[in-house]
Image (cartoon, rainbow, N blue to C red; front, side, top):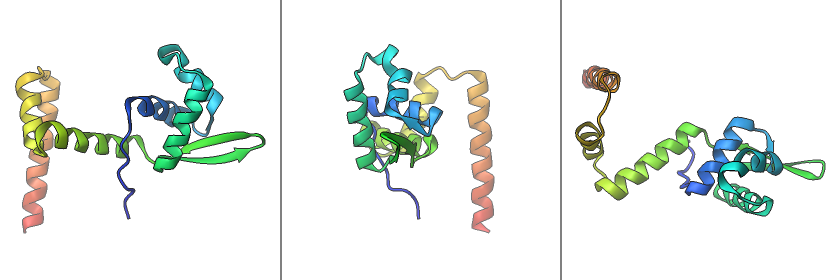
Length: 132
């Protein structure tokens, strides 16, 4: 059974990035990882960690007097959910429209275009195999 989708805010992404890098991690360590670029206080980080626990993105356990946090979602799972949200919100659910936008408007490098071409060819081969 797959993990339910969890929608992350920009602030929650910053916290999750720190947790993914440092887990298992205490709130103080998360603060140290994000404070320079966010200016957040300890209480802000604790609030965000609490929200992420409530959402099912993190597990909280105790080590002595400190809470310790570990991710329940992988970065890849979170990216997939964020991408699906973007496709729904900005492209009316049409993934092809997103790809068209990327190709036509976002100046893909030669390497990116080649990688995309290979992915599409591999998907075409896999679809033909499934159809057999």
